[in-house]
Length: 141
Image (cartoon, rainbow, N blue to C red; front, side, top):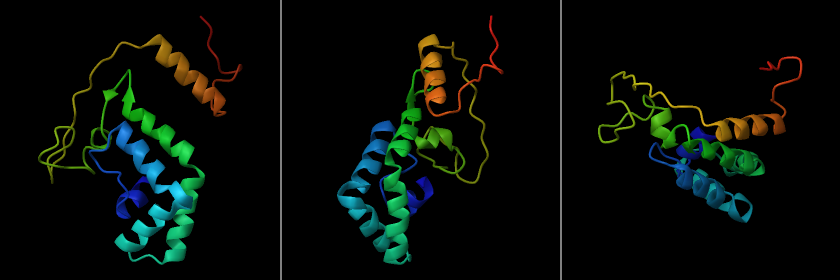
């Protein structure tokens, strides 16, 4: 979905932060995905019907996609861009979060102390999504 939105020219870029990510999905899905379809037809060689189907799929699940945007601003990673998570795919000479074009780089791993509230909130979210720890696999201490 992110690749489709980038290809169609819908506001998701390597420099997108949490706010820009959420706004891109929200504005693309206004008016029954009209903006998404219009940009898709204009920027790609895809037929309008195919754009409508793809945009419809994205907009039907816009809540899930905007939840993904939350990863760009967390207590663990701080405020980041897509480029920080995809340093090779977003290679750029001017973006310190990315690799230089045609190179391979390895960002130093910062060690963060675990935030108990963030860890608990994440576990509760995973449980809510049906992916939480089961009683059989839980470790108690």
